[in-house]
Length: 345
Image 1 (cartoon, one colour):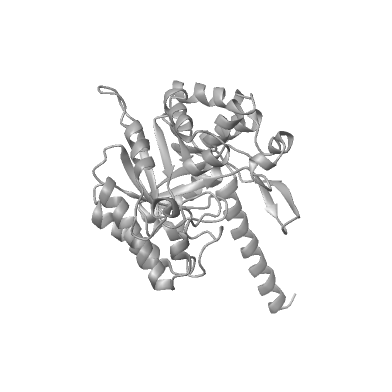
Image 2: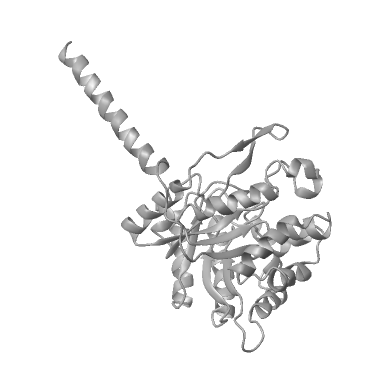
């Protein structure tokens, strides 16, 4: 065997060994299940209204009937500042007021999402008046919006964390072309929030399935991750397919360990799949189709999967859908299962 062939064989052997080590690190083994797990939910007024629900009834039921003590509120720039310089806070004021709880009783902890991209399609919620602005003008407008929100609510005791943007480094949604390329702007947003309210840590989130989280770990105080098992992949407007993520639960644990060791940051799950992922909005999709990616069995499996990741904080994505299934479809099973979880934790 020539020296060149020997060199190639050794090189390939080293590469295969490294790949095996990486595979074993991320996919082999089990994480320790935390003794105390914090369970919460994400809430979007927009999503509740899109499902034809009374959003106040939905929000109240989440607190009073489900017994939820941790809520991440998704707010929208286009709703709050629909007209340039005019801010509408009535609905958010109401949500935060409900979170305080009766005198003498613990209230609800709130994570407040602020920024241009705050979750739910089209992800970036830009007011019409700001849609056609030049890049720097849009950035200035976003910063002014964030400043106005934080100054208004920084003394509210219900808020435990700010989340700046939602998966800002993950290319998903209808956002300006500059949004995913200018990481310095995300740093500027986070720095602004911390300067206005240094008392609270800032969460910056990223995809749990499509990222190693290093980018957001460099910027935020806490890393927020998504956690999805069932998804729909779009090929075109009319074509696509369902698929199941094959990540082992330990995949999240090992990534979180790297983030802790390298950056000294904790990782929490701020978006645990608990609703269907469908080609179209729920109200346009038959229940049988919805059940392909979320039903009671999958919901229970996702809870056990989450526990086995080793993370200790999870916010369910889909509570509005649970209530819609209960109130509009006479199928309260997932709501009832969630109720048992929240009231026993």
